[in-house]
Image (tube, rainbow, N blue to C red):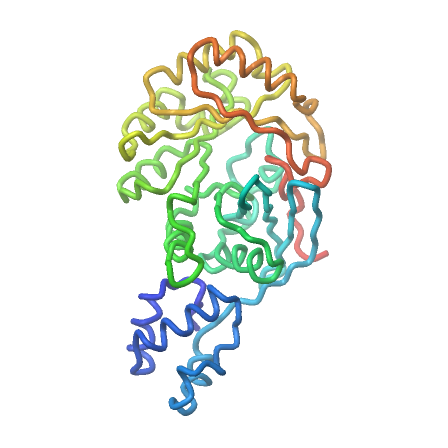
Length: 345
């Protein structure tokens, strides 16, 4: 059975032609009703009034995934929801409330194989990849089940997006379709730990409007090897070359995410190393507070830590965007998702 959530409207049109002898008229009607309006029961549409049992035949072959939200937790500026998948494994998604819109942080894997020392999801290991429809389902749930006005999507929940690139890029294409969710690529951001082959593969696709964020977190190989095991395979020299070679639109930039961990990567020497790495690259620094996981390896980053380190970078002429902790108390902050490899309750 084919899943509607893995199709663009054009894909659906082709599928209807192949299996039902129908085309654009019915495809657009179904796509708008389900993905744009959130109604999975499309049988009552006027488009099917003179089509006999067509709606029933389509429904028998076209899967519309059902959202099973089993847990929620929220604060004033963030809201986490947990989805139970068909195999009862669970993924976590976070809605961030901005000044004028909401951003949804979606998961791309159950668990993650990257093993970053500051990330709760990394303690799970990789359990399995998410399918395109399971990534898209998180947006459907946020917009239509939770009734949240999600405008932007970031692929930086549970998992490494470039480790599941084909499914992620198909999800981005589905979400960008104007006849459905209508979240264009310029409002989507893919975050990576610096998986260089994935960056090269993504660059070859020439999706210049899709934003890229690289999680750096240390600008010396010795420290990054400890914080991010991926650095042992793809050290900073190779990562820097991948950033240099990545195709960007005129005036475009890659975000360098830097999780500031007190006493670990927040010294004046760390700021100098970060400045040296970023020099000459089309990048902007995204300074992020460390949020302790369940084990709490290090103390949480305070606002004054962000201000102090940010000032060191400003002195060097870097473009810095400061982020403040959101949802830390309900384990919805950056680096706090997951951590429970078992399925079910």
